[in-house]
Figure 1 (tube, rainbow, N blue to C red):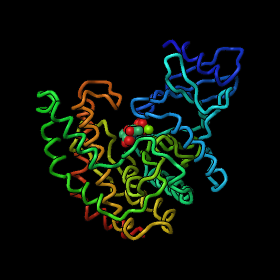
Figure 2: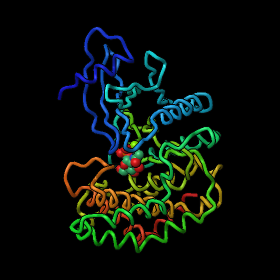
Figure 3: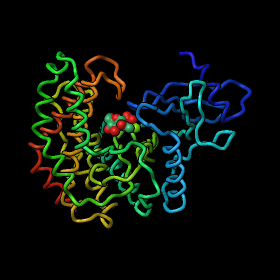
Figure 4: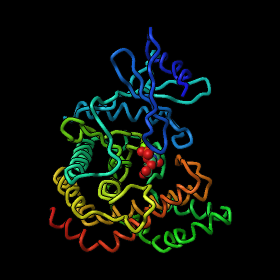
Length: 352
Ligand code: GN1
Ligand code: MG
């Protein structure tokens, strides 16, 4: 791959004698991510997806506010302070107007895609709980929405309905069972929307691959991907964590009958998470944690399904039916949670 077009971006941030060495990091469904080296130092370079983030300026402003807040008010390490360019801005633009940012690279770390051991599930949860507790004092009004209505599932369902109306017949036929299931389970979104949930600053995308672990002792080091940190609900963060850290396989698994929540991972997540957030949670939040998991898994299925029907405009894909596979995978996870509900509720109660 030719990276020469990236030199022009990096030179807006740094002076260099030798050309930087770039590598592609294939993380995430949204932004394009690279790492590069200047001398001994390694950084992350990211192109912000404008289709998803309409206002990169707001996004980067949020990031700086959050990093400064956490530096002053928490003991968290590895904060994602963006590197400022030579004009003192937290991003740079290329000749086509695309927005790029430079972030610190966390040495000696890795981002797992699935949990291999209960201790990893515990660590993800401890890290997320810590992070939410640290953000607890940051007023929601300080942070602007980077994606409005991000977890407004009722809105997302309305969009799905419109997209469905204009989707090609063949796609509608192939997605028939998932479309039917989304319709069947839709009342959950209404139930969630009717809950008196406190609005807090939350991560909004705490999937397991957004938690970095240390290569030496396998402890969680930090939570990355701050693009969607904005006012929202603690339930959706708990939900997204469980969706990815407790599942028997990731979103890409095609053997849908093998997708379920591993009870031992769920127990580890509860044990890692609850003590961190215990003091700040309201009774409504406490009573509906498992509904948060169901909500986010169902919403994720709906999001993949909508994108499949809409011509794969949002999530990156590497083969044509990938978003439908992901939607069916998440629907299988949702159904398995319905079957496991009693067992999971017992684990939650035991973890208090
Ligand atoms: C996207 O960017 P990435 O891959 O961390 C998405 C999340 C989804 C996730 C599904 C801004 O996250 O909301 O849960 O894919 N991010 C955005 O894997 O939409
Ligand atoms: Mg992301």
